[in-house]
Image 1 (cartoon, rainbow, N blue to C red):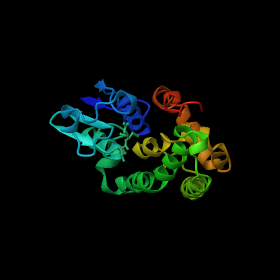
Image 2: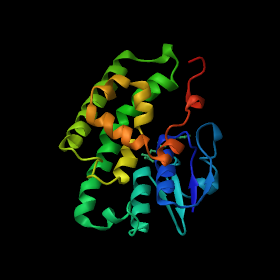
Image 3: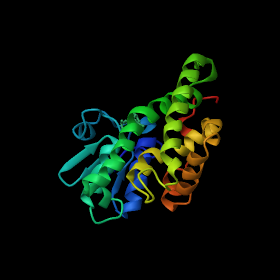
Image 4: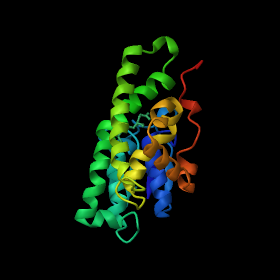
Length: 216
Ligand SMILES: N[C@@H](CCC(=O)N[C@@H](CS)C(=O)NCC(=O)O)C(=O)O
């Protein structure tokens, strides 16, 4: 397998974390951001969006980070992370979280991250930051309710690919908006459980200094 994508991308980090949890080996091609390469013909032939991550697995190239997580699960139905996705009823507890992560949690997270990390203070827009924080608070309330029945992880008590898809945002989110996380005890406890995983420490809790706007 070949994983394409810079490790500072949160979407690439999801895949790095998942590959590590599945115990898989792969070649890593660092492209995107300051490394460039997204318009190179070899990479461009793999994905119409020309964004990272892309996972080349034999004859297929999978793009969209959550599609990659599902692909790995389907490829390894006997692994504890893959088994739930091989069972329609169990998959139905995971899929909504992955969709919710991509459509509802991640967009305001990316918006706030860009404002606070990737833009210089003079470029920031207070109204936009307020809107992103409000949307994030609503999304985190939903996770808080989801975890409120005492379950350990998003789709039940077992760690799964939904925890990877959404949990990968928690390190940076806690950095840029600690108040949003600290106000939600179930979200905080879930994050702490993820932090105990060595693969989380290796791939998620990493510096994003290279993404900072000059002078910030
Ligand atoms: N929805 C896509 C988003 C992909 C995406 O926007 N990737 C960003 C990095 S997080 C990218 O390729 N940006 C261009 C770059 O890194 O140069 C996914 O989940 O994979």
